[in-house]
Length: 199
Image (cartoon, rainbow, N blue to C red; front, side, top):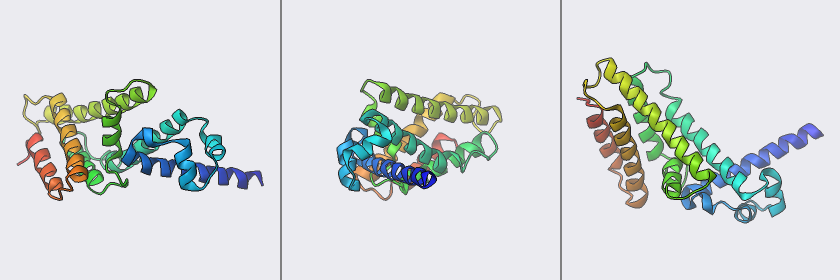
């Protein structure tokens, strides 16, 4: 019986986080509250709190789940490619696909949360900032590898490339969500081609 109870508890926790991620993709992490999720899932507030303790822990778990999904869809398909331009192109292809066919109703979760928390303070701000800092560092590392292998011009600035790739992804998400611009993915691919000096 305890095993069954533990399994059920894990399923309930997963259902709460899944609903929280879907909600936050539209309303931001601040839209994720104990009461909101309890109502959406037909649970008591105590039932939700029992899995997370408080709102901050729930928001943090929501962010971590979204990170896992982003990693699975954007990094995992590219990680086994040779380092440098091939891996960077694979990352960009997967990133555009992730934003274009987002698993979240509000579009790219990571784009949404970056905008929501860029000017705020607190632990969540720090986690969001660190997550994006590490991602930009990874992009710059691959760009530097591509430059050193001769696949990018010798005077390429890896940090600038990472900056422009990130800006392209952010613009793609905005164009799709705010303007419903179905031409945006093609524009994003052309932008990536220019950034990576592709012919």
